[in-house]
Length: 250
Image 1 (cartoon, rainbow, N blue to C red):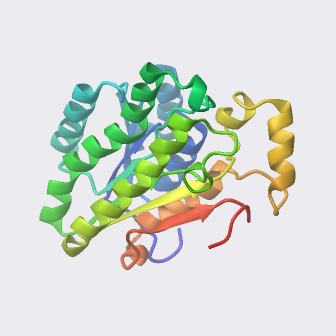
Image 2 (image 1 turned 30 degrees about the vertical axis):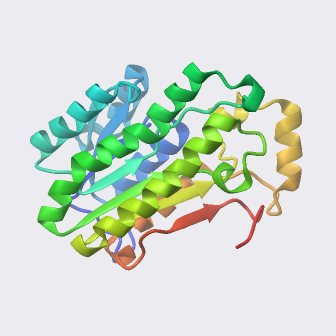
């Protein structure tokens, strides 16, 4: 691991740990020396992480849509590990339903997993981070928040815009305590969201629109997470790091 990116002795919590991005993030943080509390609702996906990383990960089978269980989870990890130094709010539900097709039940479920759980976990870890004078919170947002959702639906797009707002608010409040809060906004990461939930026509159209000519690899997102989690990133907070292959510049 590069000098300045060593995370030996740090405790990280990663939500959506069993998905494509989550697995890559877990692997990258473990390689940097962190112990990772892997959080996912799929026991099978968590078991695969255990087979890959052994004692470097602890497994937490939780549905983040259950906010009471999510709140207990933060306390349980803190109690077991003595605190959480790095929180990666990665879990997310995608819906492609636009305005007219948006069901309020789906809306509330998406908001609960994509935003509310991130708030609950951030509140759960920040006291310990303040006490230690060091912490990293990294939220996984989306290009959809900036463009209004090219293929993504209304609820997903709004949830990621809310994630950006949560990032800004928490960054402002926590900066003076040695805690940085940033987000990464990828577009079209190679994952089931792209491979299974978009039609062949949508994938081909979006691929043609990306100037670099390919989709994003999960490992690229994980590399950005590891950098933002590192001591070298201590002067970066309140940033939304775009990873969109040139779809939009600002």
